[in-house]
Length: 201
Image (cartoon, rainbow, N blue to C red):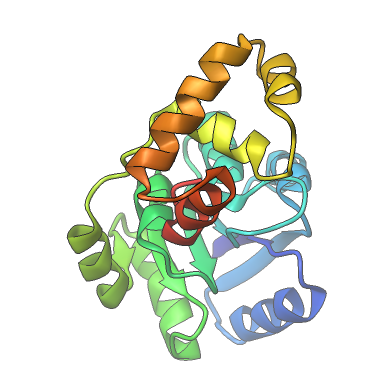
């Protein structure tokens, strides 16, 4: 049996995925989590072969949760299933050790097949998204520029951002200016929105 953990914040979607996978004779859903925070605890208890995670959830994103699960349970393979087929998400997911990246509007029968392929060590990537990721190029933002944009997207002042990230106000302004330039935006709000749309944050 292939032991699967489902991490999805929408109860109805999570239930539908569990029901779909339960129809397969060789797949067993051994755990469910409703948030990125909960994912690691459930994974450590359930010891799944595969963790199937959504990207956007409250309390943290699925890509960060995927990296934590991979670190704690190296034998667990990670699959990302998302509504948001953004090229930047695909790159971040691969960097976090994900073996598969599928969008939720894929045909249902493909999910079980993808689970088996990942169990066998294959990578499974939505073809349209793979092509988009190649044409989009790499994330132009540095890790610090991403941190500052995330902090700025909530409307925080430069002083607040500096305090929360332990940086000087001048350094924060420099990072914001650089991020605005790299995203070809007019201001920090637009820069954060463009970066989020691309999946860079």
